[in-house]
Length: 278
Image (cartoon, rainbow, N blue to C red; front, side, top):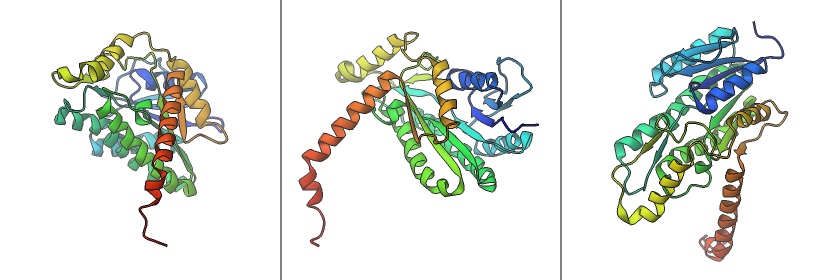
């Protein structure tokens, strides 16, 4: 049975990366974790408070069934974390449509299916919290990551609207926007590349992809500290809508905000001159 000091967390993709560290952090803190992996297997230490379920987030019917099974284990889901996802890098012009659609099936439609399955259960209790792991690319995209950024922009957009819809129902939403953290995101486990590179983009998208690949294993962010930050944010009296993680992410958001503010100011007269006369 779950006691009064425990929460039940449902986390997709706990085999590696943020999902794995988040599960470990929660278990260390005495919480209950229901994690998913593609094959239902995990090398996380056995614990009576840990449950592992198989899930392919691109199978909407399986998502609904798995969320129902997770809920039945303890009669509630306090926090649902959409962590499963992967990256697709390369120039926008070079993007393979099939590969892009496959990525959206996981990064966006998979997360959407999990939310749609969990929300009726949360609405019934008038409580709960949904955490969507997006990316700094979903706030401030750079060259070489346009397709990945698009999938995270989509998740950001639906989450911002959802937050307004469910706030009166006692349900919270937090978007986690990490920078570069020392997980396996930049390995073949979590990263795909678009087709044959185009020479004209070698100095932009090509160079950016090369820099990211070279960064593998040297990312500045500590995933253990990120996991602790996520848990602390969700369990705080006033959880944030946006949780930007990492100095690099902070700097990119600041630069993006300043550029956007300057753009608005430069074109203010034109913007305000397009209404019908009062």
